[in-house]
Length: 345
Ligand code: HEC
Ligand code: HEC
Image (cartoon, rainbow, N blue to C red; front, side, top):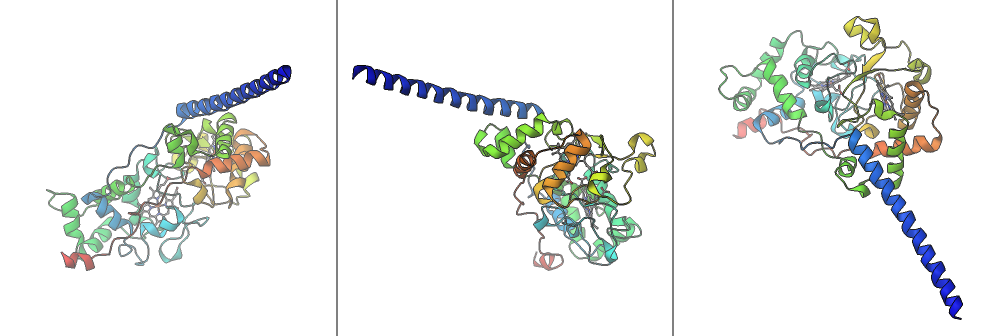
């Protein structure tokens, strides 16, 4: 009897020991994943307040259609709240239904990136905003003076610019248009579950998402998609290992940054996009050539890293990318247009 008890006690002890060891390994793996992730990425800093006069003016301008050539196009025409700040189309269309040459990225993360646009042909989001109203396929105005004249003709705007830019004799300017929109755009990034993970909450990611993060790091996606934006801090050739269009099926391949710099070294070079919100912003790539995220992941592995991913790896990485979705901020919506609310003051 005594020996039986002893044996079962020993077995129990051994089993408990194994269990503890397994837990310790799991905890060790979590800790290693977290410390690797902290080395490569950074959590989102707190967004500035959306309640300032400049941010509120920017919000108003963002949803204003009356400054476009056909009266129908606002920034939100191609960066929609219900599409996570993108438009769900392969390529956007602007005034009079004109098609843009490229896909509309989400703007939620634009402020985090080192340059704007797929080819990095805008230095800042402010420069982007200043130029958009005179784009032939966006707002379609002949010059910025037309935009200013339209703004000044809508009761409420002159006062709102004056309030946002106090002390300026004539505050309705192209520069202030860009500035207000930039201030507003900077209020849009919101923390995701991945930010909670980076801030030390290991349980913020499911085991499947953690497995995907591990893969994303180990196979080298992080060579390009890193930092606070999980991308958005450098340029890279699209198609390092093989021509991208062989996998995406893109017709008439875009030469990328080479068309901006006129340098062969920039052939098929694009900004590495931020992957924040990517699960919600398809179709993918600069030309919207791939509709589904799992296929996008497979194409990336193939053309950037020369890797053929298993279905399980694609599923894991896709799961991880899903943890990069932020809530849509309540202030990513239109205010009552002028002059209605201006009249109430
Ligand atoms: C007709 C559709 C359309 C309209 C209107 C429009 N955009 Fe865009 N936006 C796009 C497209 C397409 C791109 C990508 C252009 C490129 O890379 O060549 C883009 C890119 C951007 C980017 C850069 C994002 C990144 O990740 O690089 C920002 C910021 C942006 N838009 C803000 C705005 C603002 C602010 C307005 C209003 C002043 C505006 N957009 C109006 C379609 C539009
Ligand atoms: C050598 C740099 C590099 C590596 C490595 C890399 N990417 Fe990319 N990634 C890019 C570039 C550049 C683009 C933009 C391509 C384009 O022009 O459409 C991109 C685009 C993407 C997109 C589409 C984003 C969008 O908004 O349309 C996803 C998703 C993506 N990468 C995921 C990954 C994954 C997953 C891996 C690892 C398997 C990976 N990337 C490896 C450079 C890289």
